[in-house]
Image (cartoon, rainbow over all chains, first blue to last red; front, side):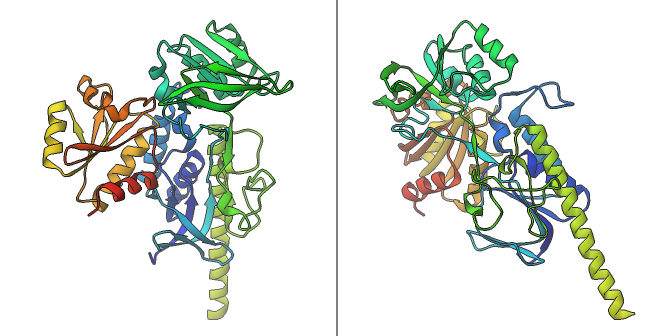
Length: 320
Length: 114
């Protein structure tokens, strides 16, 4: 691939797609590279009701519209790729894909997002899709008339637990702390939901079963006592980890692996910006990701414009 | 109805016919949901790379999809989509829940050599 893009965006979630929409609408030649399907974690969200201007929608529908907008403005989308090398220090940045293709661009925006955090305990991989799920919307109805466990204490865990009570006869939330981190309104609703039960200060240490999940071993964290808890399914919502493993030594990362940026989403490397759930920040919402993608795009556009101006000034000097 | 560019199987008879007509057949049985759409996207991309494999989808809630839901290879499956791989009409592999491109191509390469 010999063409040089103005902007290469790594990641196709809300931050990357927003950056793509703004960059391509500003007539910057833009490509978005994504390791999986476009949409990011928003596709895992059932109902989105707090995105301004949209009363209520499905997460994957919102993502599909964002993708279409980027495409319609002329943004090139390349999905299901694997990046093997980054060369970011030169004026023209180079990104090498596993199939040998090289993507060149004047600037890069990293919007690599995050992925669901796993418990990392015995049986977790074995029973994935056989009782362990990360999507209540997708798999909730498999548990109609059954008993399930939800792991986590944030907004996602409590909201999904409430939605699972439509299907399951009993939903038990297992949480490691003695309190929840979710918004007060969500906690109140959870506490009022009749089929919900709570096991606090506890964690799952093992998944048990033969053909499918049949039980979990739960440990009470402070006392260390363990017991077997029969269940048909477990839904895990314990937060996300940033997709930045491949960026160690390439971008500035904090001790949690998040990309460090300033208020312009600048990473400190000329022409390189970052946005979305992979950056160091407090709040992780679709709206914040969209805002950061916008800022990164505008900041990079300004950087590219300044570079073009320097180039033109130099040309005038030579000519003049 | 599934909104993909892949061929959608409507009946169990049609699935059987596709199995007879195609030595290598991959069928993704799901809904238009977040765990299924990424698999359809990957299949759409692989159609060109694997011309010797027929790619198709079937709606999970179609009563005719019972032929997939009740396949012994799907026993214990509790995550969408159910993805089936048929060789000469026989089920050689089935997976549950979302799969990435690498997981899918490794199955295609193992069971459906060119």
